[in-house]
Image 1 (cartoon, rainbow, N blue to C red):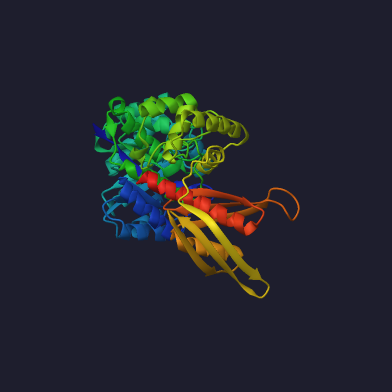
Image 2: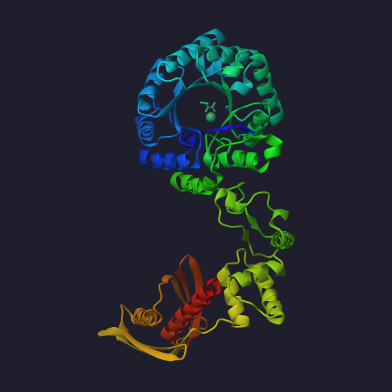
Length: 505
Ligand code: KIV
Ligand code: ZN
């Protein structure tokens, strides 16, 4: 099986996404994670572009070993010297130099003719070779260049010492069949092509960057340039996770794989998203929030019987702990029952029917059904939460010149336990007393009070959210006395946590 090199350009082309710029520390953090992901090459920046880019390449070169660090340089002496200076301390360094080869770029941007561009490319590669024997040349806008001119320039830069020749689809213009033919044409036509690795670098303007990259691999490309989450200039670059997982999922088709530790993919995606502030769309392949979520009843049913019915790869393979069954209006009874079981409820068929009906009605009104909603449905309908703790008595003293004090008595198993606590207010004092009796390690995330009916005699309803060990539960309590309602809500949530703890033991 061929091993395809993964050249990650998240820190260079990815950073060119509008609004995605990263400071040196952030780039270093991403580079460390890319090293754990085991990309072959990290393109750390474009040193001549800014002092920040220079510093980032320098820091990454100093701190990250065991991976090749690349720096970008136009085909100009000063760019190449600056890139070499930034890379000086790298264990493995690559200078990546480029110049455009399409007539559009030559005429309107560079104002150079083909001979001048050829000379500049050869000169740049030779200069870069004075600093390192790992030099990459990119023919910018290759896919809109004359194919024979492209062959000529590729042949000459290989002669000059380039070990990698990159064919960028700079403006995301090509389509898979055409790009595959171009790669095959180059490999067939350039006489010394066997002295270099053919690389591809595709942009996603037509949504084809990954398809184009994979087609190029089928036609002989040995390196793919890509970014985490597909971030990059305009519509972005080929997404690393999609390229890698396509190769991993279809080994017989591609007869190619990468060295990527795929289990690090999700973590890397989250880190890049957090640092750049670029949110990953929920339906994004491989790393989106819904990539392993199933909502349709038929899908959920099939998935629960055999996961390969609706999943082509396992979430664990990309570092996502497990698939999610999203409960919504399309969900079936089978999935609903499975989720209840996970939450610790085993209902009789009769109770299950009642709760499932209620759930369907709620799902028609509400887009997202959370575990807490399901728990409320269950406790409202069949009240199966075992009462590990129950409120026996509550006396509260509070007032203008009074230090709030609560005396709480709970029944815990067969025992009555009483505690007195002070607090910043009557609810605080009550919660401290309950926390002390139950010895809870949970955190109070939310506390909401509302009145169910009008007037001063209104029934007050309290909702609390508690978190313990990554689990969140909601508790409800209602009473005409708002402090009692608060105590009931807290105890209700603590009982849910106690039930979940028992179920997961
Ligand atoms: O898209 C492009 O052509 C580039 C080159 C610098 C490789 O990013
Ligand atoms: Zn690019």
